Image (cartoon, rainbow, N blue to C red):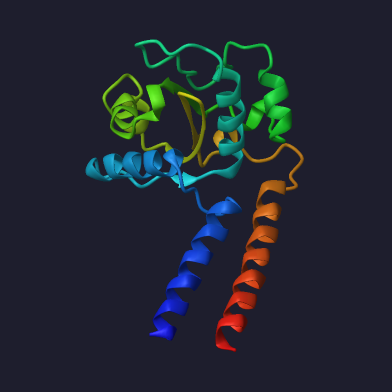
Length: 197
């Protein structure tokens, strides 16, 4: 009985640590991406992979929309090759170590849904003008960010002009992920050692 309780405690602690450190999304973004990938699967399209750099941009853009009121529309998307219509866009790219040349083919899809209701949110993307982008096989990655009632999906391609590769080439987002993974590894090892005593 003690062994089962210890394993359950370990699993719970691991999930809390992983979610808390942001190694796995445990929120609306993850649920929406899973729903979008299920939708794409029904169209025989490959699943979108998480693009951490596009995710950074999505989070920054969601912060820009935070205080804007929700309307009944999906919001205005940014088609490939264009920039969003707010003055701070270059600053947001800089915060995420991105360059406009590596984001040209990407698409930014903001949506406002009260309380980010999961069903409404998914239908806002799959049953609106946004579906044409989700139906496009040239998009291979996605970054999602939310703030308040706003969700932002940034779609990325596998081409240099839409890959969202860091401008400085440092891959800093990947490095911090590896460091966090190392921390989780050591914490789990510590917990495991404690349970084995």
